[in-house]
Structures are given as structure tokens and as C-alpha cells.
Length: 140
Image (tube, rainbow, N blue to C red; front, side, top):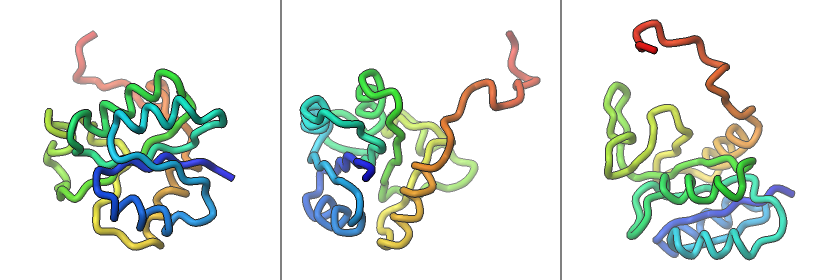
């Protein structure tokens, strides 16, 4: 059974997501600080961090970076209520701290869509900078 750490500052979202992801072991936290404590106290692997992008205190991106130092195998899926428009860099601006190619699911979502996206992220092989062709416009 895979373990998912769900982090959202809205208790209702935590409860609903926990029900939607029945069949997984769910760890919950209401902010990044609590998530770090939960992760530190959990002995087994955490397969996925499912975190809100914008939260009071540290952002989801900052949390993911911090947890990845101890749990390098953990994958990340971001949740956000902010609309992401193709071609815009809203997700990579300073407020959210993310990057355009990171996995994101837009709120509100259905249970079916969430489980589909979680499965997709969990089964995706980790990317490596060597998997991408070199950028011909980037100066070395």
C-alpha cells in the first residue's frame, strides 16, 4: 500500500481528499511545518506528497524541496485553485514557487480525476536532466 502525505490548510479539503484516496495510506497535515513533523515521525516510505501550492507560511514548493532532502524517492503532486493558463508563468512566479512542468491538479476536482492523476504521478518514472534534449538557445 502506497503512502501519501496530503497537505492543505483547509481541513475540509484534507477530509475530502482522504476519502477520495481510499486504498492508500493517508498522512495529513494542515501546513508545511506540520507536514515536516509528520514526515519525520513516519518510519516507512512516503511515495507521494500531495500539497496545496499556496499556504500560510511555506508554500507547497518550499515544502516539497525541504522534504525531498530527506525523502529523495518521494514524488510530488501540487493542488491549486488558481487557474493555470498555458503560455503563462503563473505557477512559476514567486508567489507559488513552482515550475511549469511540475504535476498539478486544479481544484475543484472529482475523486475519479484525483485518483487518476495520483496514479499517473506515482507510475511516472523520475525525470532526469539527461532525458531532455539540450536547449540549443542556452549558452553554456
